Amino acid sequence: MRFANGLKWIVSALIVLGMAIYLTHTGVWRDVSTALGFGNPDAIVDPPVVTAPKTGGAPDVDWDEAKKKAEEAGTSIITQVQQALDDVDVKGKAPKTGYERDAFGPAWSDVDHNGCDTRNDILARDLTGVTFKPGTHDCVVTSGVLDDPYTGKTIRFTRGNKTSSAVQIDHVVALSNAWVSGANAWDDAKRLQFANDPVNLLAVDGPANMAKKDGDAATWLPSNKSFRCEYVSRQVEVKTKYGLSMTRAEKRAIDRELDKCAG
Image 1 (cartoon, one colour):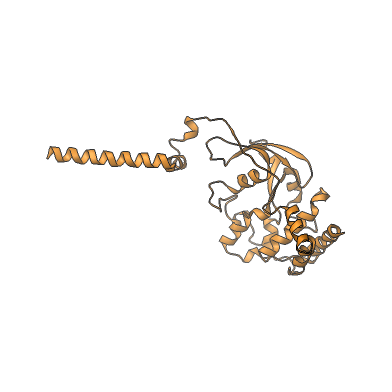
Image 2 (cartoon, rainbow, N blue to C red):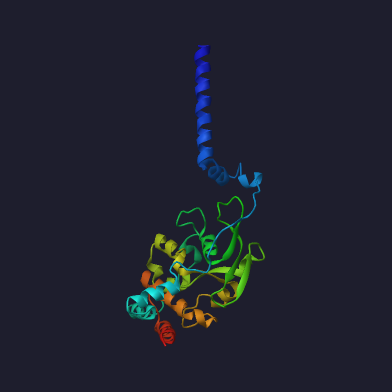
């Protein structure tokens, strides 16, 4: 009996040891322990900051590349945007009743399940010379340089309680504007996707973003005029993608800007 109990203990110990080796080797234990708040590898190891080879400033679809492809197809990207604009419904704004930020889900959710929240995804995409907080699997951006599309300024970003707001993530089509343009009728899943869609997000100058508030093209445009073509084109892309409407003034404002681009 004593031999049998001893054998069972040895077998159990081997199973536990094997599981520990597997979890450590695959990295699962690291993720689980970090999530639960114990055995945090950041508290044990302080490796040097990793610098990522980011190109920065480039949206999901490169504007210059898109123009080139349109020209190769015998048209222009502005013509394509104007055609898409023609198909956008013109409606008055729906009541803002019921709107709140939480209606679009938790801020900066990890909707693509890559382990990083959306804010850090966009910072990593749009900044150059990016560095990450050690032990975050290259997720948490600690510094970088932004060539701000809204103002044309160069901004040196440093993560911190008093400095992070210098670079903010703007919804090109503001959430509240989306709400009064059709998003009030969406389900929670679609609103969450919209709020975290990279096509609708840009890292920008914090004060410029605050000045924009929830304005549409009829009430606000970037002070950097060289970016206005891409800005209004992106608004058309987003509103077309999600079936959102525009007010008559908004549509006219975008149409005027596109005429300048084509000129």
